[in-house]
Length: 281
Picture 1 (spheres, helix red, strand yellow):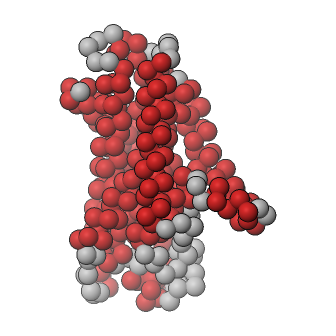
Picture 2 (cartoon, rainbow, N blue to C red):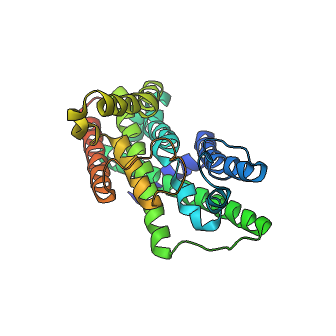
């Protein structure tokens, strides 16, 4: 297992798409978490990040104390979609290259190979979370120095909770991408379906239920995106201002964690059963 895991990490490290996706997530976090709010604070112009918020609150939102919110604020939708794409690439790439059959003729069994792939995926996503946090922390420190503002950091427990919650969100979407790649034996279709679901279908369903079919709210509250957004809301403690896309208080943080863990377990189980029982050609 360790050898397969090391091999998967080596492949991901040398794969350009992994770095591009990670860089895109980092750029989005810095742009919407720091650049646009700080420009609004400096110029006094309103934007979606500063509308209805006092200048003092805008500045507080880009200081080190808000680093957790700025790190994982976009995980519910944008970074989640990137994680789903990565999950599809990790598993579906073997189908596209035609290398899965060759891989399975070697010593590792199917479930060993899949376990190594999913573990490598979770490791890379942990690296994404830490990299985004480091970049956001540096951005907050820079703004605090420029504005001569207090450099107060979140408590260690809050920091750990926030990063762990963000990682759980990304892993859940990454496992969803891996499942779709296994079901459709490829990359393009799983990515298309997954991204459309995250960015459009789930948001539309939640909106329709809230406005037209309130009796089905229990169904909407069980969707993975709603629970991902609720977990982000819970660990960021609802900072002032307009919430990032996908972030909601639909369910409690505890329920969101349990629901995402259930989704992750189901995604892993269905992926394993499908790979174990079906022809991989």
